Length: 403
Image (cartoon, rainbow, N blue to C red):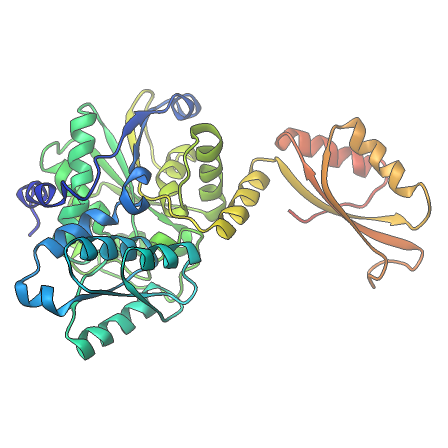
């Protein structure tokens, strides 16, 4: 069984490779929530995520024969980069299987750290099946992304840093994919400070841990669907589940729109770039997914910042929609001079700024004398959106909200 001593030993092994990341109080989120929010900024870790800790600890414990045979693993991206860098620094050959739709940025980064990348499968679990085939075919050692006690111990070094940098911490909020991160952190914290709460967070579209705890046994879900690709696993680990049962106080879920809002807030207010999985702990705090009291010291662990730019664009737009700052509408105008000008007078009166406008005279859904118009707008918040839409409808326009 994983113990505090294992995490302490891991810290010595990873010290030269993994950085000690900052823990900073956020006045913004403290004011928004009433709690005392301190962000553990693992986004500043080497490779942009916490995975380098566990990968380094595991590779440091390989036997001479395992070192010569090389390693293989499966990952959606962050573990891939961690294993690639840790293996290269130790002179170990690495082969990484990533899902076919893994973010291009993570694929390129993994290759740049010295690994051979194989794309296979629609998600992490399918990629893992191929990686185990390579393990058998080539005699490589499989470095599991989460279901390995050496990996868990490496991730647990984050917990050591949290309690050292914030000795008064009352609640630590940690994302859950397969469970390796929260298992290691929970052991490191609970074995020193059993009264500190550890809250796990999953995306609603990948909620195997929450379902497993509710049923008292590991369950697997058929499909995962979330923007938080770093925690998009169909099941939690066989080895991690007992630690979650023993040490984790509560597991909650957040929706993709809530993740998008947290990500946008972190970009705009904290000047911090995170990926979907990195935003879920803050989303759980902002949307009050668990109970906390005034001035409670809460540390959300922002576990990674490796987000594909195309994904980031979509997430930002969704976050702006959810916060009432982006609006896309469709309406119908008479196809005659001056019709658009009449509509724009309402826009001007309500200070709605136009991003883009598109006319469609070919739509079969409108009369031949009409034109369909789609408009993208910059807005100032939910109240502004409501007032603006009411003004349009009061003026006789039939408006469909598209986003």
